[in-house]
Image (cartoon, rainbow, N blue to C red):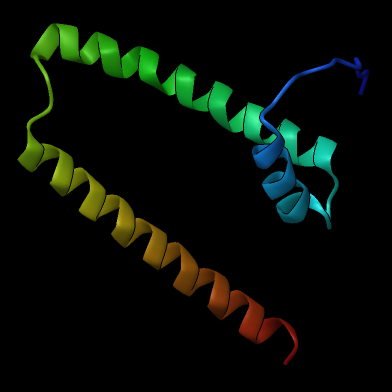
Length: 90
């Protein structure tokens, strides 16, 4: 994969915090992950904004139901991963 070196300026205290969190995988990898996460989130907002224009804003109840469903899906994914890793060494 081709790379490009860039320079960014961030607050010193944020740099210090990130350095600690990113120590194991490296600052560049940490920043790349954060940028990809932000880019993906921004891309997801495009259809959300379109849907809200078409159908109106999401109500608090709808938002709470969606979050509850996502939490359930996350829990199920965790259970499946635990089941796979538990059987892998047996």
